[in-house]
Image: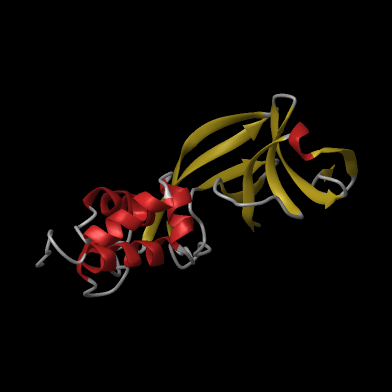
Length: 190
């Protein structure tokens, strides 16, 4: 593997964006919590972004060879085609860590950024803690200190209708009156 640490950083950053599944540089900025001008400067300097590469590999399990040089495949079969997710169980409104699970990347939605595996009431969910907006669907929420998976439906003006898994309406409230923790990306039925 021949990595040029003095040039080629812009191409590496482009591959980082692809590895995360982002559609724009600003999405990478938001994820890394850096300003657009900081990322722009890194593109202009074109120096190998070692810190971002390490984080990307840990987050996405992409191949170092592909990320650093563009050679080979994004994921090596049998090596980087899996992703480890933390597993949590929601019991009586509390979230309890319950180990880790290994998933084949082909099973998981590509757009996941900060996924976790959640079990509540014998139903398994894959949630993502990174999201841009709250829209109709299932969400992991906290209401008055208790966490659960609920269906949310946006209603005027900046309000949501909150219901349980069988769509029985529980209540309506302002969006800011509940804490949105994560978006449900997948429901895993047994």
